[in-house]
Length: 230
Image 1 (cartoon, one colour):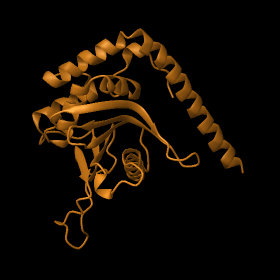
Image 2: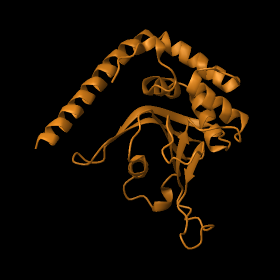
Image 3: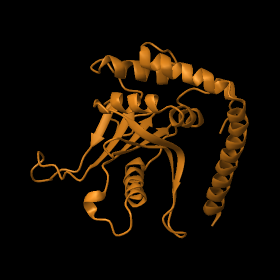
Image 4: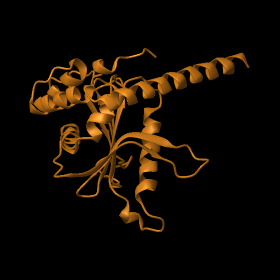
């Protein structure tokens, strides 16, 4: 893991991604609108790096961005820079943890909110060349029959060719890949990134965050080496 300077962080860096979207409801709302191609009237709240832990002995998760809208739907935005083998299983686990977090004990199942998990990936996880992969639960025997359980898993391939995409998707991908802002949304996003780079407290927080990440990476590497010796 290479050490990075705070002033060079882009929106595709996990730390910057969390800070920018957790402090700006409007940017979060518009981001989801562009990816899902649907209108969202209002985002009610947003939380950054939300840790969900149901029991002491269960695997906890730390969600990059968690927010909800005026209709009660819950959205989880995840920035994924490094390639990971089991994002599909991870998305399943995240969705189940969100369900447990948002339903009160004893509440009826219909109270479960719609939940959408979105991974923004700097690689093509499925290798099919699509810009956006969206998955719903449908009937195997009758594919036009939707289970309608209120869940959606979305994987954004930021490396994809966007020639057949909307102008807003093209601009979004271009900004994540190059830092060039070409429409009103990405210009606002870029301004938020510039402002974040001047935030002194976040700079100090990033130094601590990066030190922890490097330590965890080292410990994971050492654990792997010890496992190979056995």
